Amino acid sequence: MTSDPLAAWLPTALGHAPHDLALFRRALTHSSHAGVSYERLEFLGDRVLGLVAADWLYGLFPDEPEGALSRRLNAIVSRETCATIGRTIGVDTMLRLGKQARDDGAVNSGNVIGDAVEALIGALFLDGGLPAAQAFVRRAWAPLVDAGTQAPRHPKSALQEWAAAHRCRPPVYTLLARTGAHHAPRFTVSVAIPGKADAQAEGASKQEAETEAATKLLESLS
Image (tube, rainbow, N blue to C red):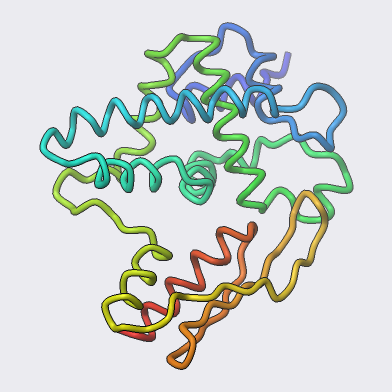
């Protein structure tokens, strides 16, 4: 009898042997696929990730103020970071998508992969309790949490601060285009510091595109 690929993948990817395999199958099921999707598990996993990350950072950086801890937390729980983790552990290879969603490229969507990672954390919490979810997050996110580095500043915040420091008007973001299917959209955004410079970028969400555009503009101004 052929073993279930999901059962073989989970211990390596998550460091947890599942008790309820159906729970994890649901965590990888997109709404375009028949059956119950990952959306409720995503809701739960998002909150568990925030709790685990906040507890981790609170202990790891005992002398940092709330603002610095918040910047670190925002970087850890961002959709972009979850998608990066998901691709690293192979979530994209295990997603259950409807035919149209797969044809439209949803398997490569950072939004879909990030959502599934949060859903898997929710499944871990239900299947193995907080210790199982915490163990996965600390292992998978460890390369991104470096006690030797300063708390990251979000590119949009950094650009706002640059404009204020140089006595310029605040950055202005403009949505130029939205393309792609509903479950795999692409956004094109421009950002400008009026009278100074501008940049454009694409992303799987409006926020992702704005962040990338701010990063590009900061690089051009440095």
